[in-house]
Image (cartoon, rainbow, N blue to C red; front, side):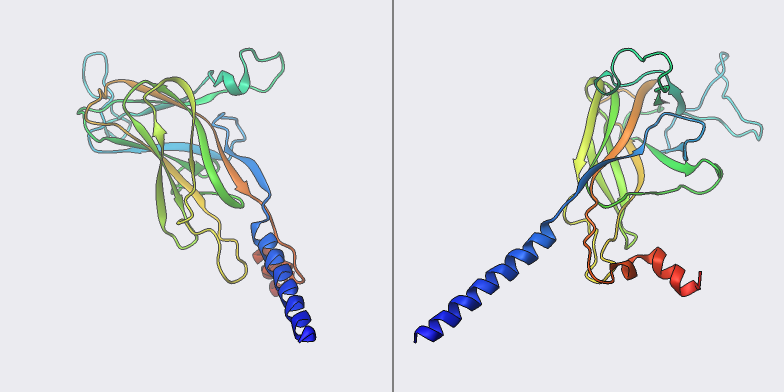
Amino acid sequence: MKHSSFKIICLLFWACITVFSAYGQTSAVTLESRILESFNGDDDAPYIWKTDSSRFISALRNPDGSEVKDSNGITSRYPLTAYVDAWPIAVFGYNRAPGSPTVRSFGLNGQFDRMGYNWIDLYPVLADDPDAKPYEIPIPGIVKNIDVWVWGSNLRYYIEVFVRDYRGVVHSMKLGDVSYPGWKNLDVNIPSSIIQTRRTVPTYAGLSFVKFRLWTQPVERVDNFYIYFKQLKVLTDMYNPLYDGNDLSDPAFVDRIWSGN
């Protein structure tokens, strides 16, 4: 009887060790903050930011009231975009020391012909191929949070962020309202319903950033408004579990050894 009890206690002890070990492996995290885009407009920036908009976007007009047209005779429309010498003081301070890197922000000047649920998309394109289709920025690790600094004009607008998962499904999340004056850090936690891992190796199945979408609301004016963006970041889990043969779960390594290079 005593011998049987001893065996049961030993089994329970090893079961507890196994459970705690497994739990320790799955719960291990290495959180890092990564900047996906500075919105600084440097000459060597990897992306150019372009816009798209809903149907009631206003046309640009000459001083005489006529529509501005491009060389192909197509009407030029809002929004206007530019990099401006402005930034959130909470991040970069009041004064820049002589010789310090230039800091700028990405500005958007919009206007619609009608109030309502209008929208403007802001999305990246590779800088070395500006006429190509939109480029989605890969997000490293298992992302927990996305944030960006946004300057608002106290308008009743709001911003969404769009990401794509490994299955090709695009998810939209509300970053927040811009009904405040000045700079504010808007952020959103990534819900667990957005899948970022697989059961089979390689288990990592990261997200990609698709675009921002700025929405106006029917209760708010839509004439000649300004929005500014600075420093798109993610808080992401970069933990990489090690096991015997984990290099064979790295797609780049597998491609290299199977190609003979």
